Length: 229
Image (cartoon, rainbow, N blue to C red; front, side, top):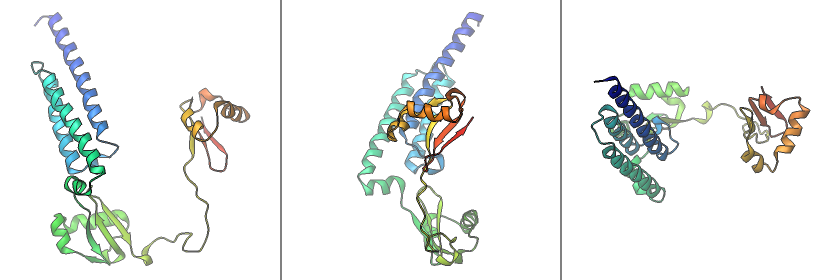
């Protein structure tokens, strides 16, 4: 193979890889904002198939790229269609995602539910320890979610003390509003707050900071602006 042919072959592989990358990225984005550990069985199957199909045109230049794009498109449409259908059908959600299973109730381990979930005691005890409750007797209810994670509700006497338990009233804190990030004003956030960039720049000038040098600026619920440069 001559040098020119090698360059053309290399360029072709790079272009095919970039193209397939963006197609796969689109399919993954369509799967929604769920972490890998929170994927339903259906989503996981789609992810595995997408990975296999995407690898074919990148591994072999003789493999027509359209033969990968068509199945990827079908999978994307199937994912979107079933996701929208599942929003309005509980039966379909149960079929695709399964149902949560209660494995501890009133401090008692439910062996029958453990067997149905094929969930062993080592896994149960490990996840209880991760949640900070090493003894099943301390747990009121433990549920295996459809993602495979264990949700734990401790008994009332084992729960951390809260202001509500003491009869104290607290004000809701909420999240701080991000006004500047990486030196750029977040105008959508200002509009939601009923503010504008003129107001923000005046506040920044009062604090002696320049907009372009600000890494992060947030507006707290009490009206203070917290600035990180």
